[in-house]
Each structure stands twice: as C-alpha cells, then as structure tokens.
Figure 1: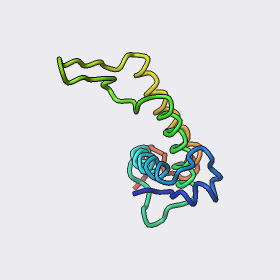
Figure 2 (figure 1 turned 180 degrees about the vertical axis):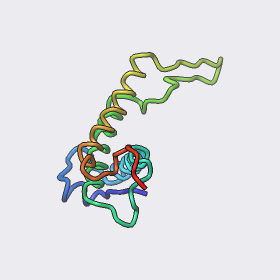
Figure 3 (figure 1 turned 90 degrees about the vertical axis):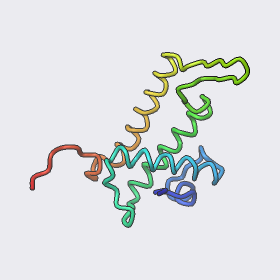
Figure 4 (figure 1 turned 30 degrees about the vertical axis):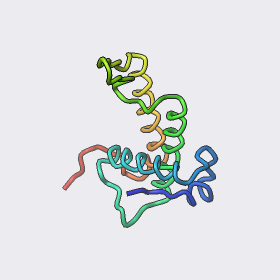
Length: 125
C-alpha cells in the first residue's frame, strides 16, 4: 500500500525533487514497504497520518537521489550472457547501500519518533 500520493508530495510536503507522478508513486511504494519494515507493520492502513505521509515523501526523495547516483543497488553489478560473466558489488558499493538504508531510517525516524510507531521496547500487558 502506498501511504502518500503525488498530490500530498507536491501540495502538503512541498516536494520538488520527484516531479513526475509515475516516478513518485513507484518510489513511494518502495518507501511505504520499507516503512512497514521499519515500523514492524504497526501502521494502520485505515488511519494514515500526515507524519507517515511525510516520512514516505522524505524517503522517496532519498530513493530518487540514490537512483540518480547508482543503477539500483543490486548485489550483481553487471552480468553478460554470452561467455557467462558476472561482476559482483564491491565493498564500496555495499557501504553505499548501507548508507542509503541508514538515510531512509533516519528520514522515517525524524517524522515518526514521537508517534510510537518506531518504538521497539517491550510493552506491559
């Protein structure tokens, strides 16, 4: 489920990095999935708050900029069919992927730290 649409991105979030609607929606879906992972599935799809939407917008910006820098961050850097040749991601590329994950988490945390969605402590029964 996509937690933020392009209208929210442009109108409320005042985003300018991802101008094309299709591109934003593709990245917002990835950001929403990542946000579900970060929150351990605690987001209620029937009650999406503006904080959740803003987190998705910030994460979509990060994903967009990362796509501009890399070819998508896959573990296989290149592969050819004739003669079979595979080039794997280097340590530097792995570090770049890890840095991107940290940026995504920090963007989510900036908007959701006060909501309880990213609290991982033990709750009393």
